[in-house]
Amino acid sequence: MSLILITHNLRLAFSTCERIYVLYAGSLLEVGDAAAVERQPYHPYTLGLLLSEPPADIRVPRLVAIRGSVPQAADVVGRCGFADRCDWAKQICRAGKPPLVARDIGRLTACVRQDEIQCELDALRTAALCAAPATPRRDETEGALVRIDALVKTFDGPRGHPICAVKHVSLRIMPGESVGLVGESGSGKTTLGRCLVGLETPTAGDIRIDGIAAADFGAMAKADRARVRRTIQMIFQDPYSTLNPRHSVGQALSEALRASAGAASASTPERIAALLADVGLSAAYATRRPASLSGGERQRVAIARALAVKPAILVCDEPVSALDVSVQAQVLNLFKRLQAEHGLSYLFITHDLAVVRQIAERIYVLYLGEIVEEGPTERVIDDPQHPYTRRLVESIPRSANQHAP
Ligand SMILES: Nc1ncnc2c1ncn2[C@@H]1O[C@H](COP(=O)(O)OP(=O)(O)OP(=O)(O)O)[C@@H](O)[C@H]1O
Ligand code: SF4
Ligand SMILES: [Mg+2]
Image (spheres, rainbow, N blue to C red):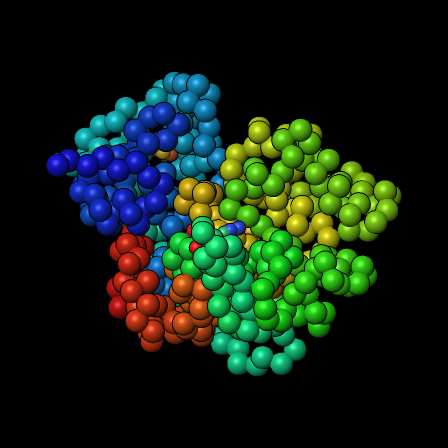
């Protein structure tokens, strides 16, 4: 049987398919044998995609993102559709639409300057494969910002059978630390995250956030609840579902600013502009509505809204899994920058070990609601001890950016 796989997941594409077609703004930019394209892309856009993909086997200091976003096909008629984002663009690239032409047996590219720039593309591809030093490990657990002890959460299942989503989970997050929570679908990751921010009430166990008992939001004193809500914020996979479609970006942010300070005067155009700038958006975005934003822009707005209350920790539930690799790289870089600038802590929930390696210093592996392994990210992924973690690591599709040992 033949298979055509349509995806933005490069690891899946390159590990599953024999031939790759790279589509951009409605046009094919590159076609070729998967192994050859992966080793030596001929089109700057393909190179950009490959560089954006987080390597599964090493942690890099910064992911390389393609600047800007994909244009509408109708806006780039009669010129190279990638020209506005391409570092090699020249007049000739805008003089007409570069045709898709054969450069080698089975290799086609729609870049008019491919011959001239191939050496530079090759150099960048090779440089990206140089390993970066591992992050230092932290051993201390005193002074944790978040302490979860023996947390249990059960739901009522069909015919009165309880579903135990989280079973006796204990976890620590230090100030400024980025912690990954990984596990397959249904392992209880989201349930744990929702318990932390008070969207679910645990069945048993203890949660302390910045020293405040926060297992049962309903039973907390008002001042404590307000403090915990300012300390911890959640980012979801689908920002669209959390933004009011009738509110402009500015209204959403001003609402969050008001909630944080409890006073109408807290929200000024300058503060909204500063929040937008923090997530890499211009002040002009304040008048836009969520429906007119791209997925990456919406996620930036959701992050800006969470930052309005100046939180100490963000719980991020699959925040980049709906984004294509280049936008994913931009948003992951944003998370890294915000952590460095604001000293934020993260609980980064994901099923993608390559993503978690880029962002987390330490990870917890959740299996059927229980933590089966915990440790520094490199150690857990490179030398998994628990059979389930081993299976999880083995199931990562081979990376398009896999590094030679
Ligand atoms: N409100 C609910 N009522 C009943 N069962 C629930 C509820 N929420 C979650 N569950 C069950 O709890 C278990 C854990 O779900 P959870 O959403 O936490 O998993 P997850 O690890 O986040 O999965 P995914 O990777 O697919 O997002 C699942 O078996 C799920 O069906
Ligand atoms: S044709 Fe020009 S703008 Fe388009 S990819 Fe090639 S160098 Fe870049
Ligand atoms: Mg989930």
